[in-house]
Length: 391
Image (cartoon, rainbow, N blue to C red; front, top):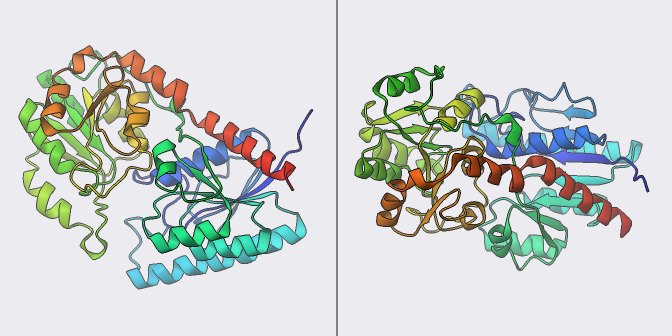
């Protein structure tokens, strides 16, 4: 039986463009992958996000924006107070348009992709709990968790561990996160082995030396553990490339970890800082690496990785991952098959020395089989239809 195409609103923040075209922004990249796949299925999508988002090539997607430029791109010089005001305006205007759309067209599902209890409460009051789907991220405040529990709306966790963190919520489904695996180039060779000429100067220099490297890519902060990455590189003798932007989760102290713990150790010889890599630069950095270091939650023991997009991007390129055995990582890394899990620094060091045992083809196969974004869209679609049938 053919099911009707859906009219879906996807409510995102105005913090970064969808997709993020200048590097950091895994959440926004995930939203884009979802919207693209639902577009390809023929569903109508109303996307609420910043005006510099790039979705005009998706024929079934309409962008609704009340903020011209993303609020947290480096080019945006607004004060924190101004950014907060503009963010609230985005929420207010978007909600007004959501209400108008529902009156004119009838929305089947409102999919909220950020953590904001007030917006979730307003959506439930306006659309009812059977039309609202909330994609969980990082609710650490117990009062906020309690508020969402009382709402009773459908929640979606990124993985089993993510779900366990919020098992008090009465209505939660696990849809394991995925990425656009085919868009990531696979390499069965590291930089010392490849005959290809890399596009990035930093890689060409390593190729000339016939020297493999380790990489860490993504948000830079104590919760992600780049200081540990540096120590591991020094311990094992590999050069280390760090790519990303300071995103320490300490409010006003946002760049303190980077400035005090990372920057003084950058020598641009053995420990190299690339800066914020865009999408194509990121793929090139990943595909020639010997291994991807991901000590998430090792330095900041309070941090539980909700999923971890960057390790799956590395696997998609064929690069094995050495990850802290915490959060989502035991669901992503099959110890000894597509990488290694560690509990101690000594274990991580030994794992790096054993990278030769990992098949880069198995890394790619893992990503293709378990973490493709098309599967994510299929599971969300099934959930939406289930909710509609229960009304």
